[in-house]
Length: 603
Image 1 (cartoon, rainbow, N blue to C red):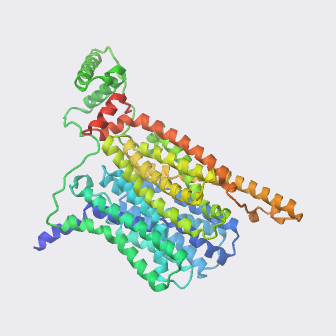
Image 2: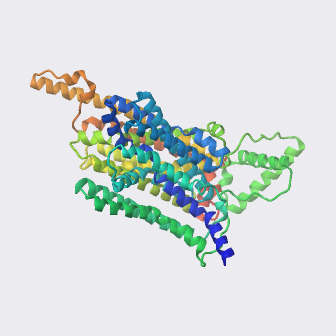
Image 3: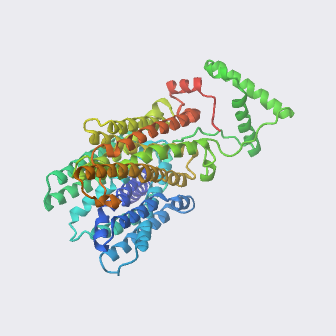
């Protein structure tokens, strides 16, 4: 009996669903950067900083959140528990130092020291993200969309979750939030660091996996609705401490609920035995030498280059005969020395690339630039949402910040689900979904630019959802096109796209246009009142009112999103045969579609 129980316990500890659930818990408190807006006021008041100095700390936070090359590289050479432990140490040391200064336990330190501490502390979350994503994508190689979407969704929602936990505990002062940011995520990561790891999950496929994902999606939807209701209640009605505590406990229960899945799989007597899945077609079990295998690969590449275009439009049986005949001729010509075949240069799409190899491919840069344009536009809206609301006359900006956070979460979860449905049913390239969401984002931004009714509500919902969808689709697409070997490094490189785009659209375009109209309105007011306005001499006090403040910026970003859609469509065209190979087998409609339109561009 005890031996049977110990086997069940061992199976539970190595269950890929347990790894996934624990990764969700880590992600639930990994979004440290999302809390900067909550901790910056106490830093400003305690240290006596002005807005420019707080903005400098915000830049340090953004840079720390974006630079994840080290985490991505370490994932390839170190165990995952070491990566998570490094992240926990950085998180604790960075924000722990900030708390010691704000709590007056340490004397005041220069601004650059606090900036460095915030950089180090926020950079810790890149280790959490990378370890969670890499482990789970390797464990669920054929469910990358849902896995990435759910994990990134919880990361986006973590700021709201940590805020509710802070309110539930009812700390005596605001500085305690910094203490919680330093200690809370670090404790969770250390507690779970030996669980979150690759466990050969591709050998643990079960018929019940579909139901397990459905249950997880249900929990995500319930959690999003619950969080939205709680945040709106707190903003509009106000709640006493007892009710806040009860709501916080319920929130923790919802976050813990998915652990039911691995428990039922490991300890239920009705669970079916696991099977094995493979993403790429299984290689033929041939004991031939490496040189013979390379020759075969090269000849197949030559076949793709030499076959006439009309071959793809032939019926299946005739097409296979023509290709086999051409292949035989090339083998004979190569053996006779009449043809010098081209040698394989590096991996092909769908195989394992290093980051440097991927950076030599046009597809990688097309995706990066597409993210810079579209994701950068979305982040610009998120970063400027408070100022946008004030310019339209809304004083309670917290409601809109909460709404965009919730729909960011839903976009990440929904983007993973929708893109997975597209590739599984039709074997279409996953970036198709990204192109569609970029068009939707473009229309949402254009709606604001044209001043439609309820423009701030429409833009908040549409931008939050479509921005979130990008970060479920892009990482999964990169893992499919360039493999899992250096997925951590490639994911962290792509993460630079959002701040790079925001630096252009927010730091240059949006701020410049806002200041222009603010000065114009101030000049008009001066000419009407006949008084001298000192605001014209101090850009910090300039304010702009009306939708005109951001309409031109939104119109520009709407056009930019169309450009991003074109780039994503180019990726779709270039990679259609890769997805036909990975997901097209057994899907009649998708396979026929690609067989008519593809020319085997798999290099």
